[in-house]
Image (cartoon, rainbow, N blue to C red; front, side, top):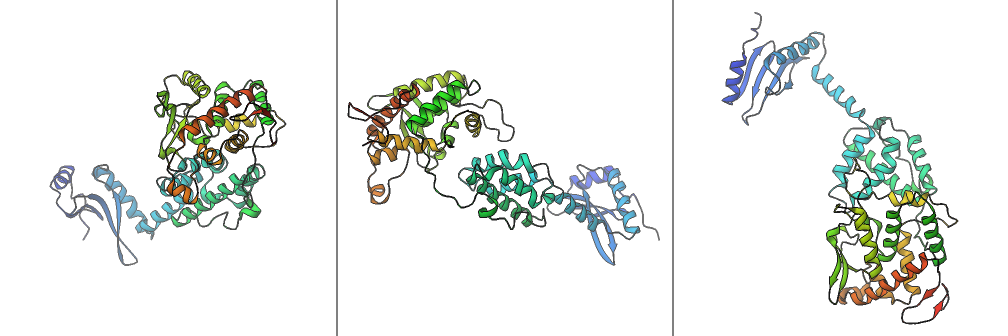
Length: 423
């Protein structure tokens, strides 16, 4: 006897849903309105394949009206009549869709699942994705990325930025390992890659510090390059004078700065713990000339809450402050005869020049927000704020002299000059 069809009506479906009448309510030809005890509901197509009952979800009744559910059920019934299994075909299509997902989609899923909320500075990984991995691999299907694609990417970076190449290889390995666990890819194209042969090799501590003579040449090159920009020049001055990390300064807000100061303390930048790489807050004294630079920066920033606002909105990171690689790109465009250096070398440069000025080692280390080691770090909680202010004021004055083309040193507490590197 033929199975009755079209038992349900729109009115009946609406009534069953409003009453949350749990059960399998047949419409005929294998289509059911399934209402769960929990209150959820779905259209369900019931069929047999190799003698086994199978149940296929056809959608939510709130989104799929009865007429469309009947059309979908008839389409699935035609597959069953042809000896095919609709559930197996849906799974295969889903697997294929996952495999066809782009590298960008896989990388973004990895970033949100394993980086955000787990690493203290996810923005570092974000920059690696946006600046290197996604421009080269982003549009490719994740499953189609080959070892040769990754090798070309790493070869373009490792000779100039070996540490960055090692970081990129580590990120690639993590992304594809994540993709394997999530059944998005079958294997990793960088599974056999090693840093020593395929990326930047063994990392050694950098020792690069710019001499005063080199700083004179650098400032001259920055002034002579029309495209370098006044805001970039101010950023270089401040990075040197404040001894901070680039990320700490470019992401700073004006609310962190007191450019007037209070008696016995003076102007200060209160760098919060959550933005400090060490996780320790720091009150950074601001020398008079640094305050004047910051006031110029404030005029350039306009109404922005950021000290260095973004020049254009970055749709990838949605941050309102200057991108981390903006200064790097500007410095790379300069024409100089200087040995290669990185922005982070400015901190080593500042530390070296503080020593040249005669600043006590423990004070110089605190100027860089380095925690004292051993017993000294455990028991001595003195911030040496006054000593740091004197040191940073002397160093800022030296930067002014250097920018003016003078490379001689005036040691703190002494009136005589001496050349860099002399005793």
